[in-house]
Length: 258
Image (cartoon, rainbow, N blue to C red; front, side, top):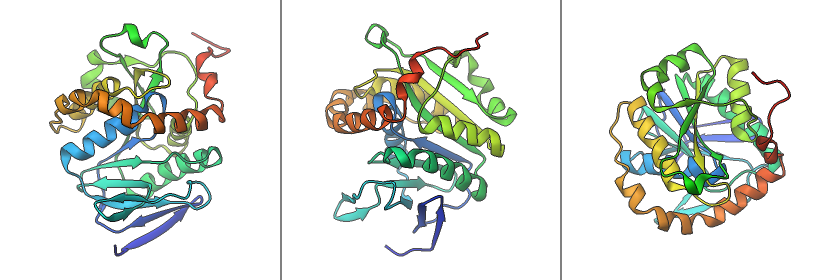
């Protein structure tokens, strides 16, 4: 693996060994409720056959891990890209103290690389998820440009209700507002503690429309039970990390409400 560039942002090394270019979209699949982000992001990468072009590493914030795929050594956090669409995937959640710098670093990296839109994928834990056949998809935007991106599809979405978001996406939202970065956050109703491929599929359908690229979700749904079993470990690790940063705050209402 040869390196073409390397940059440090807030304790994270962004190591580019392929051609990232200036993609229009950066899709984020960070672990959260239901592992919705990683499931959706992985399916998009596989469906579009995106090559990995950049690794993200931090010996202070990411547990010491190397990913082995086909006898190749990979960074635990990677960006895949075809020059137009890029996707960030992580196999290992950062330690609690690394969440804030990671989220801030992602926004700053996107701004510096001229990425038009960050599309964040997350799950929102719903205690009634088992009773919902088709999970709802909610949205939040940080700029007028983000709102324009989502406007043609508002009939299929719901605005995020009054509440509290905790974790990396909360920081990404706030930093995007502060730095005037276009960020669209998509959240689907999800199981709180177990992987939820069906919730991920609903968001993949929306992203397929947004980026105007056909992404078939049939294989994702067929593999749902296998994914649920395979990703149980990541779900537990994620829940443990997020519990330490106050994830429980999401389940209470804000002091001021409309």
